[in-house]
Image: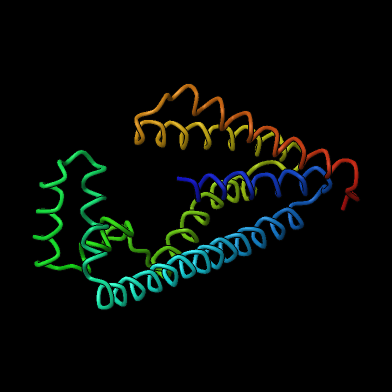
Length: 211
């Protein structure tokens, strides 16, 4: 949802800015397609780097935990017991749970409960990059379709209108999925989308050379 939202607002804002300074379709198309490709690649690359860094940190934490389990198993056992005790277990119960989990798989217990790492939360850089780039592309294709078919003379108004519709639909879906207020989501996304496109149009009008 966030990636698609970025795609819609970024590409629409770019297209609005160029449309405000152009009297032909070709420059708007060129800027929109270039922005879509660059944005998708940038999102994918940024997500890959971010998640790769997270993965490297997790691997370093796991290696350190393996070493600590070898060098000071008793201390690590007490750390695990203290974690369970803080979660509400009695001291004796917490220690018993720590002992049993340590006997079963000490590293897994510490990864999950001390480091907060499990199979679900472990990041996959390639998967994250593809998902981020794809989401941005899906969002960016919506304003691109408007650029393809809307009249050039009033392109910015068509872009604004359809972008707000796209954002309302996306905001509604996100709110319902997350169980939050639909009205607040629509208001928030509409206001910020309007500001982004309005400023882009202003730049186009003030600094653009009509071509």
